[in-house]
Image 1 (cartoon, helix red, strand yellow):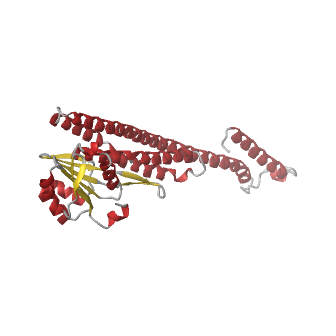
Image 2: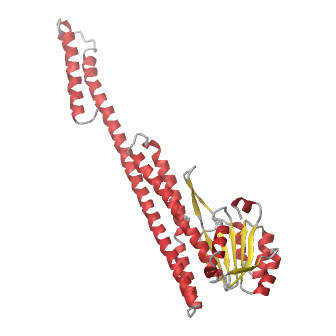
Image 3: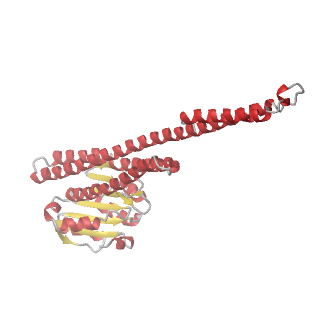
Length: 337
């Protein structure tokens, strides 16, 4: 299904799978449980911003916990994993980099995972889980792992989409580092703060995935320790975990680079201010010497012998000029001017 279609309907897809193949497509959410009982296998329901009534139908059929249902309806959740009996409730925070605004947009995918069902509730246009479904339906072996195999494909898609975000953020950091030492460095502090906030948001979306995946792998090992297919699935989750670790490390590196850039920017600002003060002080000293001499001879005392000398005026001008030139040369050598 095309991405623009997901804006028009709430139920993106609803299907029953047996041995990795679609065997039924219920006409509505109310028919899903009956189709599941008829065919066996597991149900995969994809929803896009459902209302309370629609999600309530699914919750009643599969006995979803009210607190998890409430979270899925409201959204604005952090990445997390909760156990509600035999059902796992997992929140993922997908992200995508917007080139036109140079910002990171975050979404949410809420998944309910049971022994014979997976319900995915999406709160943003990305990622397009219809593509994930199409890929899995073309790979029955992975789909035969059941709901946990589907969840692996979903989290793998989310994590893969993190790399373009990192590339965009890295380009922004490189631009900031160049801007620091250019003539356009006046507004760089705000950009550093804004970008630091995006990197921290990105870390809040990615760091919780590390313990989340470890818990899932432990559950698979405990509940299906004698199942060879579960071992292969644990290896697949391990591969995703490796990707997450690299993403987290790179995000931490970007955060450190931004902190360094902020420190360098503060140093450069202080240096520019110090240079400005040196120039102001230097010119003030140059102006002060002639002002002092002219002030002395402007006191209008009667007994000032120099006032009666024919060469007194040019001598005073010459002394003023000599002082000014001397101070200018001295300050110039010391790079004050």
